[in-house]
Length: 215
Ligand code: DX5
Ligand code: ZN
Image 1 (cartoon, helix red, strand yellow):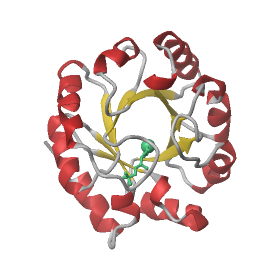
Image 2: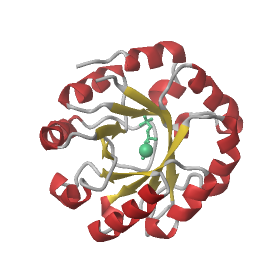
Image 3: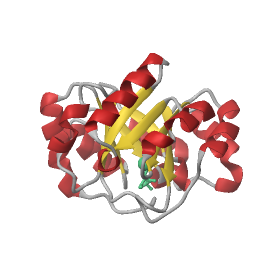
């Protein structure tokens, strides 16, 4: 399976977001990972729907809104209206029954939904969401900040999930070429990656290396 690359905009130059996006789009990435933080679920605040809306005309890349916010169900419509294509919700912030409801709604309008879980959250927590989601985003750092160190203790979770889940498995947090290879070996097929791409001396090389990771 081809490894897909989703640059996380959090490590891009925020004074030049449009150019940063066009740059990685030209280098052949698969979609953009947008980190939305509210200062409650995580101790940091980033961007919201107005920024996404202003970036929407800049690129044809799909936008994944990774919602690290409390009561995310109240904001999904705003992110969809702003131009998000994939809505990623944390199981720590939503009940499985509510996730299912949101999945039905999003699928009806042709959007995708993903479930994410923190490093310490067990796979059993997302069990009831798997039949309704398009992707699982496994956090390989504690969410809140870009540029953190990858947590290798999360690796067994990826292989365990892959043993019974056939859909897309993305990993997010501290991903570089070396640990990206480890996650793909365990069964991940999408790498959300900020610092390694946006702070690279040679972005083309960094993206090519990640894209060429195969099992
Ligand atoms: C962490 C975010 C990640 C992060 C990725 O809370 O969800 O998407 O920004 O950036 P790097 O690759 O720098 O860890
Ligand atoms: Zn993220």
